[in-house]
Image 1: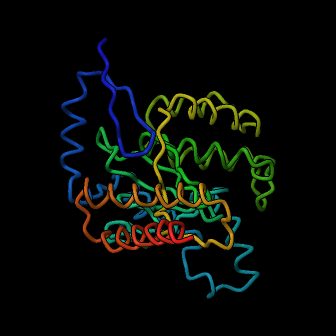
Image 2: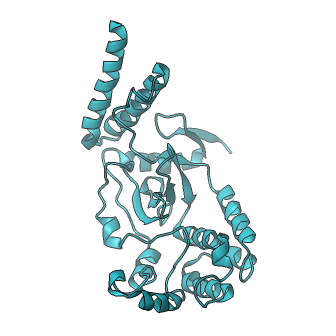
Length: 293
C-alpha cells in the first residue's frame, strides 16, 4: 500500500498514513484553519452523567456528617463510577461551554481529572469517527499522549487502571468485596462498551489481580498509534536566572515562537497573536543583549 508522510505541526513529529486516507485527513486539517473544531460529546458520557453515575454522593458533600458519609460511601460504590485515578469534575454543559484557558493547548476539551493535576481531554482535531479520541494531558510534561480512540476504550482502561491499585482490588472499600465491586462496575458500563472491550474485561477474571489489570491496560496502550501533542501553552518569557545556558534559552524561545506562530499563522487563531508578539519580543531582546556584549 502506498503511504504518504503527513506532517502535523512545525515540531519534529510526523505520521505515515495510507495515501487513500489523505483526502479525508486534508479536509479535516482545512476545516481546522482559523476555527476551533466544536466538541461532540459522546452520547455515553451524557447518559452516564444524567443517570448519576458520576455523582459520588448524590447530595452536596458538605451537607453530610462523617457518619452519614461513611454509610453512604458503602452504598454508592454500587451506583457510581468511583474509580481510582479518575475524578468526574465536568458536566456536559461545562464541556460544551469550554472556550479554552491560559494553560491547555487550543482544541483540548477536559472532561475528567486524575486528581494529580493531569486531565483527560477530548481532541476533535484528531477525530476520525463518531467520537473524538481521548488525550491524557500531563501537566508537567512537554507532550501529552493519545490515551483512547473512543469513550468505550476510555471506560475499559479507566476500570482496569482503577483495579490495578492494590487497595481497590483487595476489597478495601467499605463492606463490599472486590468481586462485588468489579461486577457492579461492569454492570454499569457494560451497555456502553464495544465487544472487544467487554472481552478484555472478561479475560482478566473476576475479580482481576492488579497485575492482570496492568498488563491488559498496557496491551491496549501498545495497540494505539504513537501520537502526542504539545498539551500546554508554552511560556512567553523564560527566567534567565534559572537558565544560564544561552543555547538552551534560545532553543526554548524558538520552540515557543514556533508554537504560537503555528496557531496564528497556520491555524488563524488571532487570539494568540499577543502571546506570539510577546515571545518574539523576548527572544529579540536576548539576541540584542548578546550583540551588545
